[in-house]
Image (cartoon, rainbow, N blue to C red; front, side, top):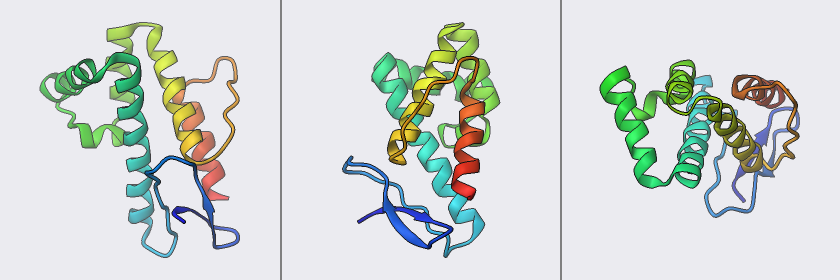
Length: 135
């Protein structure tokens, strides 16, 4: 079973029922854990943009980020503020919905129940995810 290593018990728990899972293993360095978390974020962004906008529009967003903001697709998890600024400029209030759908997808990949909280944005949900993973 591929899953998320629970830091408190060092046991592996399943993170979902999809064929592709992310394994975060605390036996490696902090960098490995961060890289895996970034991969989870990027995979969730890819899937959400593809589902909501379509593959071509998703690629257009990535192309715009790279050409105009000098942010490569792989750097998005480290440049989330810039990424969401571009989404807000492009989609207006719809960027908040996109952020919530991304957060919801991350929760699903971790096997957690997502509860929408009014006035929370993606960064808020991401902070809650990080806090819960660090326990």
